[in-house]
Image (cartoon, rainbow, N blue to C red):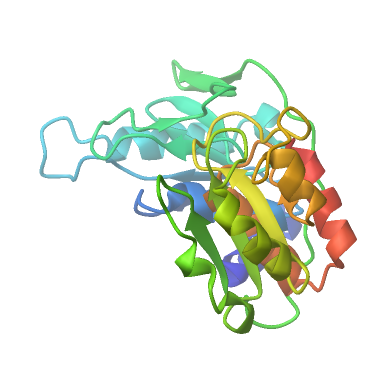
Amino acid sequence: MVSLVGRLQQADGEGVDGVVVTQGTDTLEETAFLTNLYYQGTTPVVFTGAMRNAATAGADGPANLLAAVQTAVSAEARGTGVLVVLGDEIHAARHVRKMHTTSPGAFNSPGTGPLGHVVEGAARFHRSLSPTAPVPLPIGGLPQVEIVAASLGSSGTLLEGLADKVAGLVVAAFGAGHVPETWCSRLEALAAVMPVVLASRIGTGPVLTSTYAFPGSESDLLARGLISAGALDPYKARLLLIAHVAAGTPHPEIAKAFLDYS
């Protein structure tokens, strides 16, 4: 992904009108998001893929590729950040998620909807996005950051020993940012030695900050040193954390970076 960003920056410097990146859809939302964190050019970059293979009736690959190209050469797409185009819908990389395993309409942007649509061969944007600050490229290799999800009756055993194994952690918490009380002391200890980000396993809507106050609630966990993921789902929160840890961003600045996504 870092090499891809380097090639995109090169294309931007060469005056290329637009770039389309094709890949499988399993991790498309993650690669597009990570690219968006690093890419600093104004040349449009559009990710696309296909939900049906070429031998299947109604294969969507050719149409998605065409719509992605039509979006990438649109003047309105310049400076909008990395985009994802499937099913004639234009999505922002920071919002889009794969929401179905097989449907041709698998990609959606929960809570915001698409930025626009491709109509009669032209990209039509319905709204704009406020820019987010780019993340410096990594100093070395990308660090190991994992996600631990809360579930009913979970003892938190998976948190044991993580201090020696990972450089950061994302907690996929219940609801608006809650975990079992038995997790609290372990998470507080981890937050003292690494950045620990509090996200919601729901994936839509923000982590709260001050509504609940019981042990394991969002306000309790934030007071113990965890960082709010804002409205980022756990998978995107992990990538943002990876990028900042890899860049050597100080802990207070990592917390500020997540405010762009609140």
